[in-house]
Amino acid sequence: MEYGLIGGRLGHSYSKLIHEMLCGYRYDLCPLPTEADARAFLEKRAFKAINVTLPYKRLVMEYCSFIDPRAKAIGAVNTVVNHNGLLYGYNTDYLGFAHLCAAHGVDFTGRTVLILGTGGTHNTTSAVARDKGAARILTVSRKPDPAKGELSYEEAVHSGAQIVINTTPAGMYPNVGTCNLDIAAMPGLEAVLDVVYNPEKTEIILRAEEAGVPVAASGLEMLVAQAVYAAEYFLDRKFEDAPAEISRVTAAIRRDTLNVVLIGMPSSGKSTIGRMLAEKLGKRFIDLDDEVVKADGRTIPEIFAAEGEDGFRAKETEQTARFGKENRQLLSCGGGVVKRPENLRALHQNGVVLFIDRPVEALAVGGSRPLSSSMEALRTMEAQRRPLYRAAADAVVPNTGTLEDALRAAMEALDEIFDS
Image 1 (cartoon, rainbow, N blue to C red):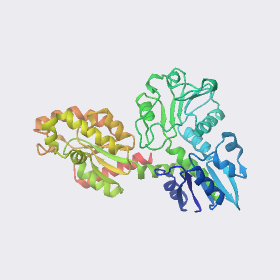
Image 2: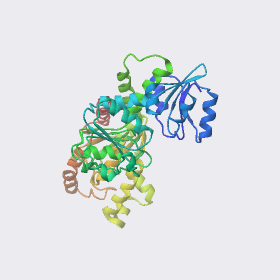
Image 3: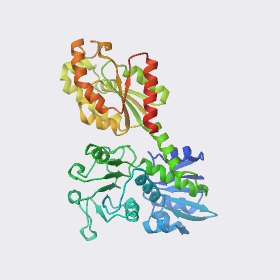
Image 4: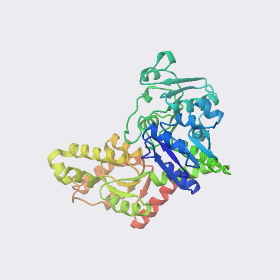
């Protein structure tokens, strides 16, 4: 191969999409499950340039004739260029993380920084924090070594840190929803940063947002930034405006990968608009009510009759969690999905949420919707749920005219969200 990525497991990497979108060259994913596989690959040197991910960022250094001083100091190489059989190693993760921090206005000067995890990315992020003026850098581990000054997660809560950086795989797809640090118990936090990029909002980021932390950012921009700087080494040329390229590709990746989630009252048009929108966006259409029926084998009225609304909501939550962590989908949700906070967390972790707002007078009464038994019931329900819809939504899409009008409004809302 000419350009690509090596690592132990690469099944859900965005690197191919990013590099090919960025430069147009072919970029191959080359999983190497064992160290012997990695050594054989590096000994052959049958590539122009590669990126390197876990667990080979240190191993690859053995094969490099030249290692950039910054990469040597960090102790990890993630970019290798083959010059006539000699391998040159660099670390663009440093540049990528520095860009993420700068893009979100994170100021390390005089701050106490808490880094979760002790792996290679710890060294990269600590190097950035140190170079940017951090006063103290503390390390947190599930199995802390007191001799190294490492803290437990319980001790970390009382560290007085202003900045938290997660370098562990906690909360990473497919094991979403995991967070080992009690963010809510840490007043004074200024920023929470996560190098994980899938899902877009990991559990620690969702908790930081809920706690009102001013900056809460995950690793997608870091991933794109390190790819931009790696491509400069690959091609031996600088981009005229690297930050602009990073912004452009990050927006394009978000538009391509993130789910679009439709919420709103029963019969507000979510499924109809959703199918049209899914086709336009090239995303897979999923109706979560249909998925509940498929999984259970009974209709929604039958589930309500047998188990009541609580029984149905539990099944709805299962399907919301199942599909919410995936990507490239258009999710049409049942009207009551907003009643459980855990559903909203599942939908927001990898999705943009649109509220399809249709006048209550235009909603359908009865049919297969057990809670829409009368117009009076619909009015009561709408009054209770409207604040929940508005609070959960990234944008409101009115559905008061034609379907084409609603589709156009949805596209305009998405353009504003993805381009901002």
